[in-house]
Image (tube, rainbow, N blue to C red; front, side, top):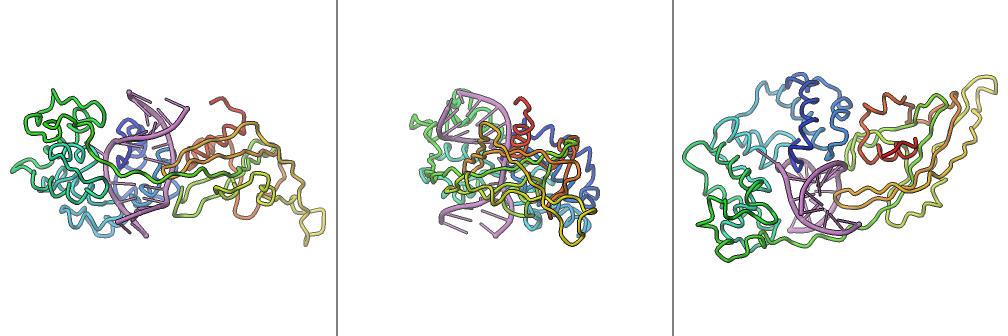
Amino acid sequence: MLQQTTVKAVTPYYRRFMAAFPTVEALAQADIEDVLKLWAGLGYYARARNLHACARAVVARGSFPDCEEELLQLPGIGPYTAAAIAAIAFDRKASPVDGNAERVIVRLFAVEQELPDAKPAIRELAADLYPARRPGDFAQAMMDLGATVCTPKAPACGACPFAGSCAALARGDAESFPRKKKKPERRLRRGVAFVAIRADGHVLVRRRAPNGLLGGMTEVPTTEWSSDFVPADAAADAPRFSAPPGRREAAVSASLKVSWRRVPGVINHVFTHFPLELVVLRARLPKSAVAPKGMYWIDRQSIASAALPSVMRKVVSHALGEQS
DNA sequence: AACTCGTGGGC
DNA sequence: TGCCCAAGAGT
């Protein structure tokens, strides 16, 4: 959970998750849908899928691996996490380097190479630093130093135990480290989201593809999201409903005429690699409306606990006229 | 090697 | 307000 995410953001999720899945066996037996529900809003959903797969792998092999090399084989456990578990949980000589420790090392040695190119060199420098005893405590101390003293902006060099040996500080420009490669421009993508509301308050949703962006999460139907999308072209992608079976001829289900109305305003959301602007269309459906193939209705209470990512919560709240 | 992959807080 | 950043990993 803590991969690329702050302790503050993680804490409530962690508590709920551990209450639901107190053991690796419990997690391994869970449905991915229930795992994603508890991850909804936290982001980077591949972590949830990987953690679930990881639990199953651990149960299958019969125990937790206790060395870096075997930990690396598990899904979702990369160089940092493998080293962190080895050092902290098993007191192994390993050097986990997170973003904080990375910054400490770079400044200590005034590494001129830009990130992320410098990562391998930084890891080697860190590996040379590991102490004779308590590798886990040392690793956590380096991370906490980066988080509280050797901060990205306005580092508190006066309070740093490395002040006397820091190459960046000696040069007088610690804050200018680490050097970073410029990021590619992120183009705005547009799309239209359809919020169909049944007379009893149920909302139409579907499941996203199991992998990729928001993989496995629940969403309201939308058009494609693309840079050259024209909202006026959305009608063709609107979900189509049929009237309930019965009365008319069984062979031909009558299509239900639906009036989509634009909800004033737009939803803006920022993903890591692109910003998104969604126009929201809303329609009221009779209680008898049949969900299109691959979609289903969920009630208000289920919306609250569903695997809806934040961007979809924004869309639904906006369409239901809730204050934000 | 360079992309992809979320979200919220801090300044 | 816009940008940076966070206990990174997978492809």
